[in-house]
Structure formats: structure tokens, C-alpha cells
Length: 282
Image (cartoon, rainbow, N blue to C red; front, top):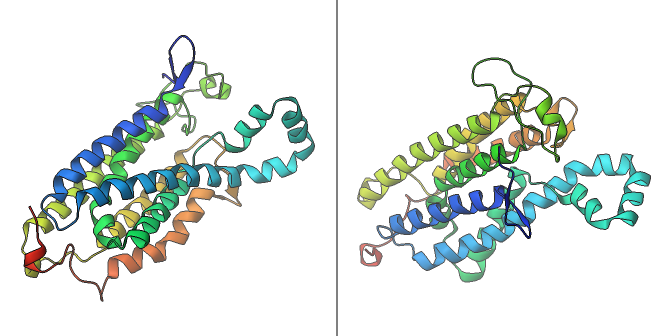
């Protein structure tokens, strides 16, 4: 466990650099693959920047909404904290990230870029889809090192006994299930499968392709909806919020099922990267 890098004059959370490393590697590979498609690589980079901004905002905003019931319930105490130290109060309200908020924010950022610059949205998502779980896997490794998003009490094989963490002091009390690493592994598997599907489609001639625009994103959502719903039962932290017996992420997973179904169905869409032969570039 290594939540921070100590630079002497300041400490930097390790989560951010690890996630950005995964994101940067993803963009390098995407731009390399894009050489074999009609998609301009400059659009891939700039749309991803829009998406990254949306990701940061969305992850923080959804975290705030998961904390809102607790803030309202303890409003008087929260006001006292805010008056004494507004930085601590803001950290309580916005000091975490929620993946689904980041995913939705990333999608909105890419959509904004696509509309503004008149770029085919599915051309972007078809290339991004395998790399969403890739970057997310790096993020979960960062979670493991930071001690956040930790698992339930667990005494079986592969259990992890975390050292004391001042941010989550309860983390070190009992052995935990390494749910962050399991999610990272599942994300890497998802990345590998989706990448093989994408590369197979790119190698085929347009009239031979069966993969439709947007289907790859649908496959990713379907996979992650099932995986995340199950993984939530192995989570031991309560900060992510609950409504009844379902966590916030499980509720969002249920709401995304129709979206995944529509993307996978894809009856009226053309095959991926369909352009006239004259527009195909190397």
C-alpha cells in the first residue's frame, strides 16, 4: 500500500499518476490502431481530452451526490466543519471519485466534441471502447495502493492486511478481500476480448464486417454491468452510498441495461468504420 508519493515539500496521491499512465498508454495504442481506419488521429486525441475533463467533473459530482444524504443528515455538524476549515468540508463533499460518474462524464465530453466538430460519434467510441476497461484497470490498481474502494472482511486465500491509513483507519482492522485487484483483472480481460474483436473487424474488408457501429461499446457496458453488480457485494466501504439494499453503482448498472441492449442490437447501423474505399487511409 502506497497512497502517496512524498516529494519532501508536498505529497501527491498515487492514484492520479497511475490512472493517467493507463490513460496515456491507451491513447498511444488507440492512435496506432487508428492508422488502419478512416478516423483522423487528431480527433481521437482532442475528443479524449474533452472526455477526460468530463470524467473528472462527473466522477466528483456523482461522489457528491452519494455523500449528500449524509451531509443533509448531519448538516449542523457539516456547517461547523465548513466554518472551521472549509478545505476539510470540501474534501468531505468532493474528496472521492465514482467510476460511473466518470464514465458518464467521459461520454458527455466525447459527445460534446463530436457534435461541435462534426465527427462521427461511433467512430470515436468504437476505438475507445476496448480501452475504457484498460484505463479503468490502472485506476483500480491505484485504488488498491491508496486503500480506497476496499473489500469486505475476508480471511481466505489472497486476503490482504492493509497497514494503518490515516484516511481510512478502519481499513487495517481486519484482513480484506482484494476487490480492487479482482476488478482490475476483470477489466484487463475485458480489454483483451474487446481488442481482439476490434482488430478482427479492422482487418476485414467493409463488406465482410459483421461488427456494427456502437456494438463494441454495448458489449463493454453489458460486461461491466454484470461484473460491477457482483463486485459490489465484495466491497467493504460504505462511502459509495446505498438506496435500500442496492448500492449507487448497482442502481446505475440497472439503469444502463437498456442502453447496452440498444447499442448491441444495432439493426439500423452500418458496420464499423464504414466509408467509401477512397476515404480509407493508412
